[in-house]
Image 1: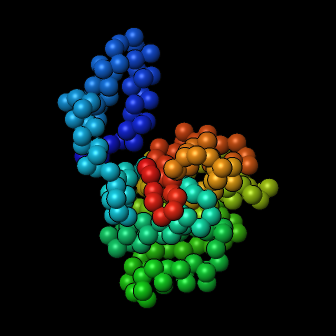
Image 2: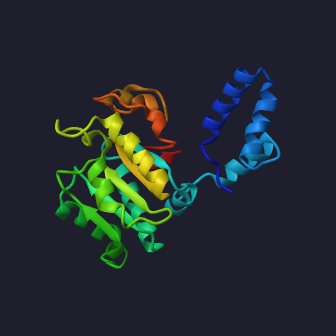
Length: 236
């Protein structure tokens, strides 16, 4: 059984429920637990510790159809590699998998993938790569709509480049459209994201939502799962 959101988000929902309905916090926690399929909050917490993803395969199993996932880190922390590992794992499971990059060239990405797979081209055959300058929400939808199945995986490299060209729609509108598309198709969309440089002076183990670099307005609540990386470790 997978949780619909990380525990800290479920806690926020419980506090909101307490405020909204004027019920004891313990009752709010238990109601949230029941909605997640557990008899009590304590049972949910115990199970959540067991379910904490530790490997790429664990992360993939943790994701649900319709999820929008933010994979965020400072440079050279492995965010693109992690996204590609998830896409390769999906391809090995015979799921349709797509990687759209406005950052890498075809040659660069293929070189990375060759090293990741030690030259084994079998999973690469099921991973569709696209490096068009036209990449946007509309472009991604047009290129994938007829090829997606339940739990198909789409990786976008990277979030902040989607509206860099003035001719493209605002980032907020694009992410909203992709969220609706993911729900309609039952697909999972991974957004690789930059983290602002100011995080490097913060005394925190991992970046948080406040650290996401946002040159243009975007409601981060559109992403129902966020994965932050630092020094080869990740936190969901």
